[in-house]
Length: 410
Image 1 (cartoon, rainbow, N blue to C red):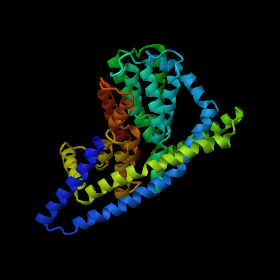
Image 2: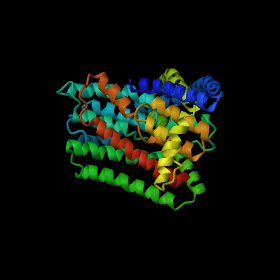
Image 3: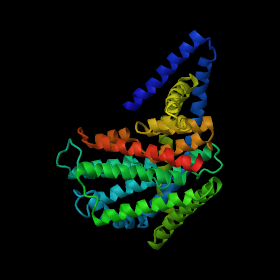
Image 4: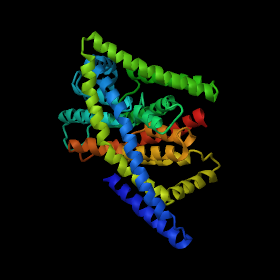
């Protein structure tokens, strides 16, 4: 519903701005430019969706091998001590733990569309444990916040978009997204734990969160000792090594379990193809709306207004042009994806704005969309503190993304 209003607003505001420019400024080119943008944006949306097909098929196929090879169950057992403390109301050994992990794993791999079916399954299982069927339970809210905080290990789809739009090093945003999404997730966990009075000072959580913080601090310190070129080379190399390690590791796990890895891959890849096809109309719709909005001059007016306000405070305003992605992300993943693509198309995939837009896209998730879809699927009407905690996680991710991008690319 929210995206519906945003999409309508794009066209109405664009039409009003173009009409004002025509009547008062004599700009006869604005309406032809808007119509041209509808065709070019539609073509761009289809080409991007087509390019996603192969990569989604690849990674969903690899994930299916990992699932059948037992990697997922290994991770689930390893995370069980942490999960039992973050979700104290879930009985130990309940099947929902595996579903939650699978959903988080899909999000960590940047496979947003693949994560949704797994998340809906987890929400149905959580609803079975819920005593008040119209009210969100504590485990539901913690699960939703972990989703909205957007914990991303491998931003596959974002890197594919960068390939499609000509980035010299498509993986150079890997480490920045990893760092930014960590701060987003940490903020979400802390905020939700405070609301739910979950004790984060127990040994297991302190060791886990403390160890993660120490690791992230070490990464930030290590990269801060490098110059820009070395930083990009190292982060790109690490990203590629991790990606290849995961692929080979999943395949070897399948071989060890005597799984027909080829058939498992094909089974998962079929889902990747159907997922890529499903997003075409959504991407066309949002890119056309954004294209018309930008062609009318309304986007420039919005950005210039924010830029003026930032500069009035004496701050560096280079990040402002990427803010539309950050502002759209809590509302719509496809909308933010469109903003990200638009930023890379307009400013360049390797520009500061293009890269920051990618980090914004990867550091948080679609808070309102996730709440609407996941809670709506099980009939939850009262969401309690889910929105507040989700938005706090989003804010932390945005602030972290800006700071980290200045460190890496500024």
